[in-house]
Structure formats: structure tokens, C-alpha cells
Length: 373
Length: 206
Image (cartoon, rainbow over all chains, first blue to last red; front, side):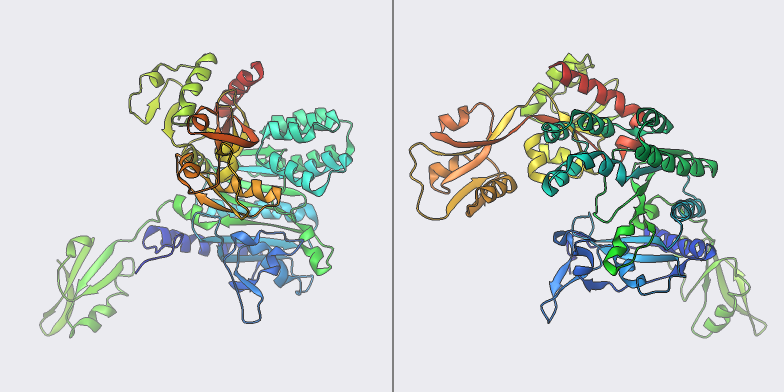
């Protein structure tokens, strides 16, 4: 029997690490007063493809149901959680989830996430709480070598606003910025105001540490709106640095890659190989489809990436008790005596070399006892 | 760890080496590489792969930077930073067919390696065609009667001419491009940005 492309069986450390990551994530979010939420794996495509959510149907695993509606395997948690919590009372602010998402544009069809959504909270509180939860969780899974990157959707949106671009050109320009494609940005901006073109070209290279914020604070000193955005990002950077995050960077040229992103965007990179371990941001707009004017921010961890990089757990010693059908129950009772160890009961001594300690049940003076072999 | 650069084998390879040398980088180990696919210089780790594989290695973070034809990027749309054009590897995409060919009064059959580019080209023209995917020597397709025409990359036009084909239309102009992995550009920026700036300087001086 074979597996479809992108699917895989798993055993051993990878799955143990993933379960450990899920468990630690649940504990961390419980300690921080998040409520658990789970949404179904099967949803209507419209939840994700509607004009506001704006996801691409091509990359979803989909089929027609009996009524001719398109159903999909959940491609994204954020839009699904928004649908689910829109009906919840406004007092419920903090939600956590964990489970798989399914997309055909990823290396594997299924990938596992653990994430949080914070709604109805004061914006800075929501963003700080998101990032501090991320740091708390990374600390608990002993992941210390990472970089946090901040971006803001409204920098690009604000800079191009005076141009009144058509939807098509705006999207093409946004893509060119997303790809840091300098010549395409220049080409698309050729018919327009030179100062906007220059700003966009500067933004392509505006990634790095604190020096980038300082440089652009000087450049935009007379622009109230952009200065406000930079100050907002600066406040978050100071927060992250004060809790000991080794490296915080910004990418001022980052643009939204989904239409519902609206404000701060964050991303975590593991320094060992550059893989992205979490991403998220603000998406108040997503709730407009439910006629809600609210604050919403969240992030999701890529649990597959994290579990590949987690240090192996300190393993207990593995003991084998060799018993017989008659002495099996006695051997079972020894678990209490040997609770520091992992106990495996066997009836023969084949493969005993794989155990750290081997015991045998013997009978002495009509009494059963275990002796170390 | 040195920056890792993936280079496209073949047509672009020699042109890259000349360009790289013009920027005063150490090219000596690359000139005598023989059939080796991985080469270390004093500053970089290089490896050589087919164009489309260069994008895969960069997308997956095996290489930090890559040099690849713009045609490959448009055809395959890899998830990488597509930074800027390099001053070599200039070519264009062309629709070509046999000289004096009378187009049939039915849906055309177009052979190409670049099926996505072909599809987009005819879509923009508002014309339905059947696209036949070939892996190479596409010039054969009209000659042997497999297709009415081809869409292929053209550098000088000599191959088309020698095979009795003429260009019916030209669209999209490309050159080699510098691409970067989305994460490592940020994580290894202290190493990569000076290299990119040197490449950029070479482009601006052209």
C-alpha cells in the first residue's frame, strides 16, 4: 500500500516532540488564561475564499458535497476561528487552538499548528500578549536561538495611497514588494510621482535591526502617520528587548500576503537554519464579514518545524521484567516499586540488549520476587 | 558558515563567471572545477544545478542566494526574493513556426517547455490552444508535425533559423537574476547584504 504525495507516517522522536510541543503549548496558554477552541477539519470553502478572507481556492484540498457546495479541509486556522468565535460573548478575549491545516502549496499536504487569537482587546495589549506568549512558549520548549521580525502592513498602504492605483496595478506592486523585486517596482512606478518610487525602493532594503527604525524615523520625521507607525513598532521592540529576546529585526518593506492583514505583522525565525517557526499579526478587518468592528490579533506556531528542532527529552531508564503467564500479574505490580523507570514486561529474554536494566521474576521459598539479571 | 550560492549550469555559467570576475571576486576554483558540482572559494560555497533546481534549493534554504534565468522564475513562480536582474543571460520568449506556414483553421497545437508562460500568453490574446509539453529540442515539433508552433526562449535566433523556423511574435524579455531565500536573507543579512550590494554595484555600472 502506498501513500499520496505529501502524506507521511511518523514514528519516534518527531511525533514525541510534537506531542510534547502541543502539551507545553496547552499548559502555557492555560496559565495565561486562554480558552481552548477547536473547529472542524471540514469547512465550506467560502469561509476562506470570501472577499475579506481572500485565500486562494487552488491550494485547498476540496470537493463538492451532495448539494454542490465546495467543501475543503481546513487550510487556515485564523479564518476558521474567526467564524467560530464571532458568535461568542465579547468577554471571551483569548483563544488557543492546535491541530492540522491542509494545503497543496506546502511541502507536505498536512502541517500542524498551535496558535492563539486575541479579540476585543486594547490593540497594544493584544499585540504584546501575543508576542509574550510566543516567548513564554519558546522558552518552555527550550528554544532559545531565534529572531523576531516585525513589519507593518500600513507602511506600504499609506505610501501608495496618493497614487490612486487600479486594483490590478496595486496588487502587482504589492507582489513586487513582497518579492523585493527592485526593477519591477521601478517599472510599475515609472508613470508616477518620483518620491513615492524612491520611498518604495528604499523600503525594499529596509530590513535589519534598530538602525533601520532610527534611519526611517529621521527620513519620515515630518510625516505624522509614518512616524506614528514607527513609534508603535519601536514600543514593541523595546518590550521584546526588555524581556530578553536576543535579536529583534524589522522589515519595513513587508506587505500583507493575505487581504485581511491590517497592522502589525510578526514572524519568528530559528537562527540555526532560518526556518520560520511562527507568524501572525493584526487582522481586525477579518471580523468585518461578521459586521464586527473589533480588534483582532494572533499568531500560529509551525509545530512541525519546532518539533524538528526540539532537544530530545531526558529519557528514563528502560527496564525489562522477564515473566511468565503465571507471574505476569506479579510483574505488573512491580511498576509501583520501579516507578522511576519505563517498564516493559516480556516472556522471553530475546532482545534484552536493548534495555538498560533487565529483571526476572523468580520463585524462592514459594515466594515470587524480581531479581536483577 | 560561508554564504551558499546556487548557480545555473550551462548557458549562464560562463557568463556568470565573467561577471563575477569583473566584480573582483575569487573565481579561480570555479574555472578548474571539471565535473565537480560543489566548489568552495575563499568567500563562498557554490553548487551547480539546472535552472529550475536552483530555485528549489534557494526556496528550501539549502542555498542563500541563486543565479537563475528570469524565464524560470516566471514559469515556476518559486517562493523566493527575486532581487534584481544581472547584466548577462539576455534573451526573450518567442512564438515560432515554419517559414510560410499556413495556420490551420482550427485550434492550434503549441509545443513548449514553458507551458505556464505559453498558457498565459494565449490567454492574454484571448485564444484557446492545446499545449504540448516537451522537455527540450522543441524546434523539432513543428518540423515533424507534432505542433503548429512553439513557444521557446530565444537568445540569438540561430537555432530557430537553422531549423527552418521563423519568429511570429516576441514577448517577455529576460536576463539572469539574483534570487534569495526569504528567511536567510534576514537571518544571515550581515553576511549576505554586502555580497548583494557588490552584485548590485556591478549591475548599476553596466
